Length: 530
Image (cartoon, rainbow, N blue to C red):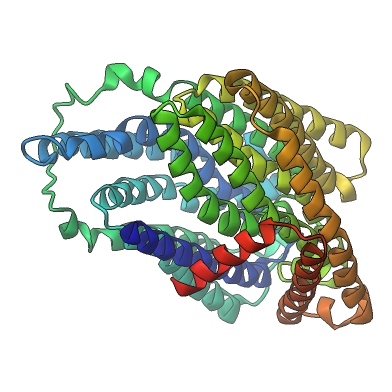
């Protein structure tokens, strides 16, 4: 257990530092190209393309075939060397082929994701895409090497390598600012500027992947090219990936529609780049709280499910949701109270911060349901059921697409990003309701009323906490005050508002005599000790 604890602490610390340096990367990038500029949205589309393509490839190949087999291969007579050589060759060839096709198809991909961009902006996005799409190969290489390290219990490099990526990107973006200043107008971009910005983004991913190779010796494996792929499991890809792969494809289609809708806000309004940065803020508490705290609970839940101990699984569900809830509820309300100064970190003016804050708050509506979904969905996975999650995810994707189209039809362009974000949250709420109902049909009563009551109690404590946080924002001058005047001051203001909100929240939980407060205190102490 001590080994698991140390690994969890190492991974958790790496996640926090990675997120913080990622924030700094986004701040510098906004300083270089602007939050609502035509160039900013063009770069946002281009730099998102490799992530979208890799998400499909990784689920269909890496998650389905390569990663699980790395662990099993350790039991082979040669320690898995021959088998892993086959897997690496297969993975590398597939990634290289996909990357080449993606680069060739760059103009059509940009047209597909941003059909409403004016021709000049599409041309700029395409130029960025030529520089960014090679990231697909290096994302895959990073995953292949990193998962091999994890399978051999070498956890640190895979977790901390993204920090190096962020440092490389920050350095390159600063150089761009020093050489060219802030450049927002699409017509001002030269090939040298495009190469520096796009090349910097890709260089970070390249370094992130290659740095892992320095630790390869720790695996004890000697990998060589091997094109004899018989026995790798190609005939079983459909069964291994199955519903999970289709689920990711559905999610990517929904994201494509959202991108197409947001491309209408090509410039001067919250659009693709603002939405990406608002999502980055939204995912900060999810990453730190849900992934760090929820993952050990999932491990325990999986062990109970494997042993057929359904009563323990039901108890695990309630316990994990309540533990996550006590943290995620205040994170939601505190971030909502600090939405304007937090958004100012990623915007260039007070007005832009207000527009981005609305988008952030609309995303935050779905944060608590997303935390509950983490537990519910992984309970299905613990029983090796990926088919049921596919169906309730399809409903969510359909709602995401429908609400995005409704936002496009009904809302003015300045509120388009907020409408898309609110639709995303609404879809998540419906998804978790359906998922919980289906899980109750599968396992019987899972104590839904009990943990809903706890979430209600947390919300009752968080409302006055957020109100006090908002009052602090108003006392600091509100939108016209110092917390919205500058990026750095925005970060300081958001931190102060968050601390005040958390303090009031803890006091309210103590007043309500919430038993989860003691559990939360123990979790915090354990993390600090580690």
